[in-house]
Image (cartoon, rainbow over all chains, first blue to last red; front, side):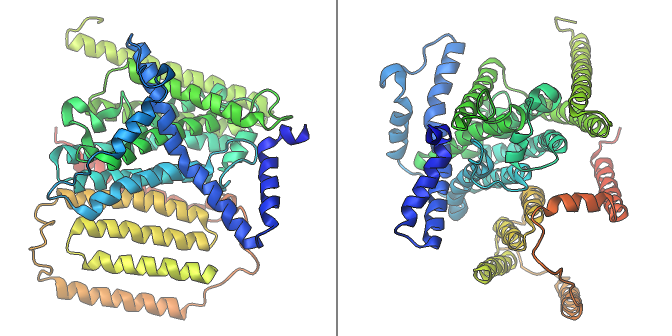
Amino acid sequence: MDYIRDFFINFAHSWTTWISGGLPGWAVTVVNFLLGGLILVMMPVIATLALTWMERKVIGRIQNRLGPNRVGPWGIFQAIADAVKMLIKEDIIPDRADRPVFNLAPILIFVGAAMLWAVIPFGRRMIGQDLNIGALYVVAIGSITTVAVLMAGWASNNKFALIGAFRVVAQLLSYEIPMVLSIGVVVLVVGSMRMGTIVESQWVPFCLVLPVAFITYVLAAIAETGRAPFDLLEADSEIVAGYFVEYSGLKFGWFYIAEYGNLMAVSAITTTLFLGGWRGPFAGAAPVLGPLYFIIKTVLVIFVLMWIRGTLPRFRIDQMLAFAWKVLVPAALVNLLWVAAALKLPVPQAVQYAVMLVGNLAILGVTLTLLGQSAKQHAKRHGLAGA
Amino acid sequence: MQHVMFFLFAIITLGAAIMVVTTRNLLRSALWLILVFFGIAGIFVLLNAEFLAVVQILVYVGAIATLIIFAVMLTRQVMDPKQPRFNDQARVVAGFATLLFVVLAVIVTRVAWPVAIGAAPVDAIQQLGMDFVGPYAVPFEVASVLLVVAMIGAIIIAREHE
């Protein structure tokens, strides 16, 4: 029973003991790290297989259709059929493309998506590497994606691809700031950048204490993954598919895998930072429940992101950048100041959290009122309905 | 093991740095520059300075390299390999570069670098944060004033004349 209670950790210990019987110490370390790395690198692929099906079903239901339903029961093998199709497609490289850079970009973008998983805690002590700079590492890895997208857009030697790449850089650099500011708030409250410690110290999920940071992070994360309503980088109706328009076959597949890997990764990071990670009822007594709670929360976040994608139309590029700089950044900055001040109050932690919550709700209220007013003014100036 | 890793990172960094200055295609040399930054980040990790390693990637790869690529892409004719490699300022620049190299080499070889005794602290980042607001508050603030001045200057230049 005790073995079951902390099944994953105990299983890992048994496995290590078992292979230590026949292998020297350094080989055990190498084998274990290789296995752990392999599992983490597989995460984007698993995410793609599971989430493409889920996304099609969810969006289908939102748009009042059925979604895939031919391949297997409820169409669950649709993703596998698509993967096979992608594998056997011809690999086309444009005539005047910069070949080494063109071939390197899909690999690099996948590396960025896979490396994020190293610091995501699936359960207590179930983390690839609990870096003492975990939260900052997440932000830094995101910058690899920017470079990869820029490489793909430039090497394709295609105007649409280049415009898409320019848009990506404007978008990713702008939305990185509110993202870092909202992660900074969490780091400030916890007093550590370790992802494990951030989860451990959430006796109440931070989304209930810091709603402004939570909302800012989720909005910035949608923009960072380039999903609707922030999907200007691949806006089909304007620039065909943006930076990966020239890619075909498995190289296109890498971009696809990276997109869904990033979607799952940002959802997992949202869960870790704001929803209490693997914490839940009885997770302390039976750590085996931790990964289960973690997956449930992550899938819930993914569902909300898909819901947003299926509901809202696409932004215009100037609107999107204005939203980042004029709404999210000021709100996140005020929030950071307020939380820093609240942490200095000489009162118990629960009272500090209450003070933070009050301030957050006030910031939210002011932001929404100002947004509503500016929308009304805009409508009046242009003679639109709703003035 | 540590030495092997160090030489590996050193070779990557120096090799990529040579490629940066010899590649005719400017955009590719910007990409080689990114590899240089990664090599330096690796050396920071070997020195137990994870914070600096991550900041290195965040600032240099994420912001500066991207800006360099942007500048290269938006500059006319600069991508053409048929353009002459040197202009008439090449000799002056070479002189100053040699001077800078000599000065740096003298500093690196002459100064006795103080090395702390014992192992590196496990969680150095909290100490770093404390030092920024404690003993090193003034330099830290001066650096931030410099950044604010640069930012205001950029905004004034970019602003449309009304």
